[in-house]
Length: 190
Image: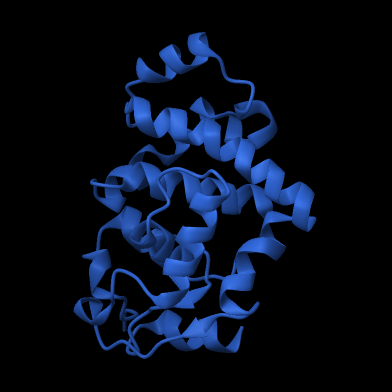
């Protein structure tokens, strides 16, 4: 018998792999948290599947999401990214990634890690929701509102409350797996 998954996966192999192994798993690695934040920003206005299919290209193009390298990007690098057909070529999102790398490094310096900073919005533990299906999931929460406002205050771009909510789901800060999904209980007991 096959596992029941959240209906947003639509049984697509890219979505299934991401859903089964990453989405909603509590994440505490700064580099991966930065990657998720960047990819969620690039996803704005597009499908997550589009981003998943291009994720390896994003990793190559953005130096494996190394914020210390990204802050040094200049016009030549930006222009090369705009010409890279393997990623989403949006000037504002590319420039936001460079800006966000600076703000990310400033947070690491202030808090000791981005992880310590970002998990404060959920008091350090996953919020477990009881959603029956995808249509029950909101696009934002009071926590994502606070996160968005604070990130913006610190100079981040493309961090609206909807992007922050998606980031929180991805990074396991919120468990929005459907209650009948096999990952729902697994993640509540890990």
